[in-house]
Length: 382
Ligand SMILES: Cc1cc2nc3c(=O)[nH]c(=O)nc-3n(C[C@H](O)[C@H](O)[C@H](O)COP(=O)(O)OP(=O)(O)OC[C@H]3O[C@@H](n4cnc5c(N)ncnc54)[C@H](O)[C@@H]3O)c2cc1C
Picture (cartoon, rainbow, N blue to C red):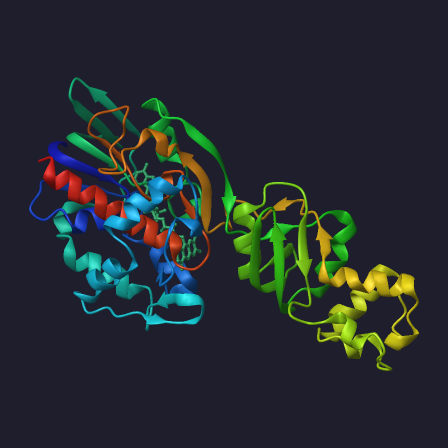
């Protein structure tokens, strides 16, 4: 089958679907290798989709801040909430300004099923090649060839390749001469060096901590896991950590000096799970005794709990990562249109671009904002 279209959108994830849903009567087709649309949206936010956040600006993203702000200014969290509200979806705000669906992420995907005519979506169609021949793009999917005047790369990055985003978009962009900023798994658990393997025995314990990573301070729940450390705060930390140490305050807001004269056992005096404290005491070589009986040396070791140095060995990898850092250099994308500055008619949106948000609804907002801006400029340039 050979078909000519105006706009080919490669990827039926958050960014590609947002573009398609705002193209109105334009001649377009959305392609996805998956049998169904919105696979990643459906598993986002633990199945409830943390769609956006009330606190929204470029400081919550890794990437060129002027580029991110330019796009958010055109379509921010309020615009998104209003847009999905028109389809009857009204997410609820939870802690930290995060908006979640009330029933399930399906609420969001169903918006797109309603907004995009089914004949304009081609699923189970993995694009293997895109070339530009004269002024037309030639797109290959199995034995089918499509020709399009404009192509939107909305393929996502490399996180969760098991549901489609396997990095093929990066390959397409590279073939078109784009620079790829070094990629790495982000919003992902971290693995431990041998000397901290004792932490694996605490698997299942979750506590609130504060962590310094470079210039950033992250706080929230840390979960000890079989493979290392995870939980919301670690996912956030993983966005900024590349190598070197992170510094964990296991007792945020707690004044350790206030218990220095306590007659209670260390494991009872400190507001931490006993199992965790006992493991730390064993690791630090301190006997569990009355706090006031601790020597100066022992006390100094306990103070480490407020600034515990940990050098992760690595991370759990793309298979477990909620996002990818790096991607197509935003120096080569026009923020007014999302069009490539290198190839006329080629657009790059969503996670594929070198913009990655923190945990909390930022990555979906980015995908939706960049998709919306792209649709607007495609319609205008028609
Ligand atoms: C488990 C998990 C939970 C998450 N939870 C949240 C959350 O609650 N809030 C939040 O803000 N962010 C969350 N994220 C991140 C967020 O979902 C992504 O950043 C966002 O969906 C990216 O959208 P996208 O359109 O750029 O890419 P994707 O959603 O990855 O979509 C890309 C699509 O392109 C298709 N594709 C790729 N290559 C080809 C090809 N060659 N041919 C045809 N089709 C192709 C893929 O099949 C895929 O469907 C989560 C991510 C994961 C993995």
